[in-house]
Image (cartoon, rainbow, N blue to C red; front, side, top):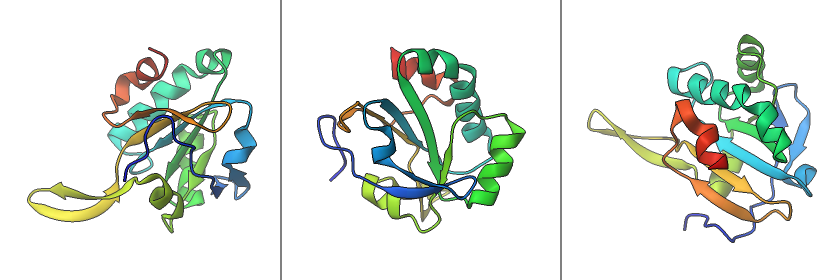
Length: 149
């Protein structure tokens, strides 16, 4: 069953773009925007990351931390982060453990064929680790507006 607002966000430990451990409990006492995206340096994912980057100061002022996560390896994340000057960490989840916890590794369809991939989804998590909102229809170019509406 998909995660719903009001549920406790699943605890996780992952590795960021520099290979440093990062876990949900690191953000206790802060609001967290945890966004799952399909692939580094693709048009939609770049638009989404850059929208969050361009509004990062405002998000921080409202008490939000931002963390991106995809199945790409840390090396890919490091390049993506540097290329677009992204000010927030990116978690590498190549074994899809965190995706499975959050229900974002799903069957998708393209050109009539099925395959497994990341469902572009954002979880807004409150200071106590409770999911406040699940955004499944992400507007990559205006994502910040969906978060702080």
